[in-house]
Length: 391
Ligand code: MUC
Ligand code: MG
Image (cartoon, rainbow, N blue to C red; front, top):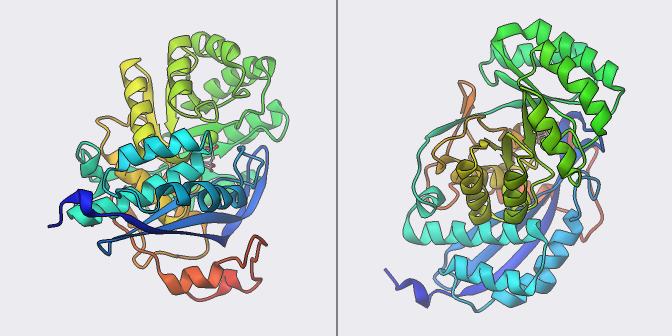
C-alpha cells in the first residue's frame, strides 16, 4: 500500500441533481415537490474516488445555504484550496478549508464526506471505522407524515406499519393554528395507539405563548417528542420550555455546529439533539456535537436534511459509531424520492436501515440515473416525465 501522504487531491467536481418527491412534503416554511442534491466527486492521485452530498430543504427557506450556493462555494473557494493537497489527512485538510471558508457548513460537509469516502476506500474500511468504530449494524428509522391531510397521514402510517418499515412517525406541524395542529396530531396518535411513537416537528413556527398552549395538549395526546418549537434564536425561551414540561424537547435548527451544541447544553435549552451532518458542517463535527450532548445528559437523535442516498449513507456511518442513539434516526431521505440514484439502494426493513458495510461511505452512484436528473447549469430542470420513468 502507498504511504497515505503520497496521495493528493486531483480534481473536485460538483453537480446539481433534481429528483421529484413521492408526494408533496409540507413543512411549516415550505412545501417540497422535489429535492435538489448537490453531489461532489473528488478524484485522488492513487485513483480513489470519493463522493459526498450537500443537501438542504426548500432552496433558502430552511437555512442560509442554497443548493446553488453550495455548488458555487465548493467550485470557487473549496476546490482550489484542496486540489494538490494531501488527500489522506482529512481532518487537517478540513481545518485548512475552515480557515479559508467561514460558515458554509453544507458545502464543507459535502467535501469532507467525499474525502472520507476516498480515504475509507483507500484503506479498505467503512467510514464508521475511521470515526472510532461501528457500534450498530442497523439504525431505527422514523418516517415523516407531512401530506397535510389527517386521513392520508393515517393511511400512510398504516401502510408503513404493515410493511414493517417504520413505527416511529414525525408529524410536521406549525403551518396551521395550534388548535388545528393539536387536533391533527391527536387524531393520528389515537388511530396508531401504542403501535407507534408519535412525535412532532414545529420547525420554529411557534411563539413561547403558542408553545405553552400547544405542548401540554400534545403531551396529553401521547406525543413523545417536540422538535424545535421556537425560533433557533429563542434560546432563553427554549430553556424555559425544557424545564417546564415532562415531554422531551429536541433542538434541530438551533444546532448550527459545535458552538451551538455547547451553548444549548450549557443553557439547558434542549433534552435531545437532532444531529445532522450537513447542519453540523461535517461528519467530524456531528460526532463532536454528539459528545457534547452525551456529556451534558442530552439524548441523541440521528437527523436528516432529507439527503439522498449519499448523504444518508454518510450520516449512517457517523450515527453507527455513536454509543447510544436513544431516539433512533430519521434517515429515510431516499425513500421520499421517486427515483433511485444509487447503484445499489440502501436496505430498509424491520423498522431500521442497514448501515452499509463496503469501504468508504459504502455506496456508489448510478451515473446514468444521475445524468438523467442532473441540471444544466443552475436552472432547475425537473422533467415532467421523470416521476414515472421506470428506473
Ligand atoms: C427537519 O426539520 O427535521 C427532516 C425530516 C423531515 O421530514 O424534514 C426534515 C427537516
Ligand atoms: Mg426538524
